[in-house]
Image 1 (cartoon, rainbow, N blue to C red):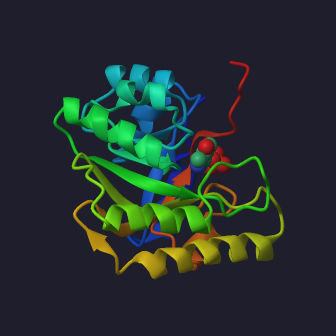
Image 2: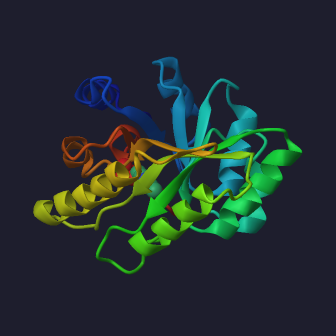
Length: 225
Ligand SMILES: *Cc1c(COP(=O)(O)O)cnc(C)c1O
């Protein structure tokens, strides 16, 4: 299996420097990642902590690793030495743990807060009220010097209903704009991570500036490898 260079060029052209591309390499071998890396891709996303740490060890050290899955507090410590951006932060307690582990490595770790925007119940993320609470907490001087909340992330419903997807992304963009003016020492919303292989074009139209694309670049995933 190897990567689809033509698709990579198409996607890169579609982004036109308006959005960053995170190439989602979960379940894909080192060789595929290297192939894309050789073309100039530096941002890669992974969902599983163990897979991420193994790939980190074997690949060039100037790759920026994005953790895009659901992160359990007890696993934070394995990725804090090197992770570039954690997309799926959905609780104050997880933030505290990231801050604690980052302190041990004297790092400041970039985080995105994940919002629950889909109609499906299975997806993780904060609701609007929880987001408001968290931002309030940050504003009222919650002391977490080793984290930086630099944006929001969300996943639309898994659906063919373009109108629904557009609406969900639009709602996330509204929240992003609403809190864009809030600036604290460790909160400044700049990154809006939304859009995957099937819906990234809609996400771009709705204001995304970071897309996470896997299967379009690497081919379909086979979970029974
Ligand atoms: C797997 C995954 C992606 C990429 O999905 P594709 O449909 O393969 O592009 C993006 N974001 C998250 C959070 C994922 O888990």
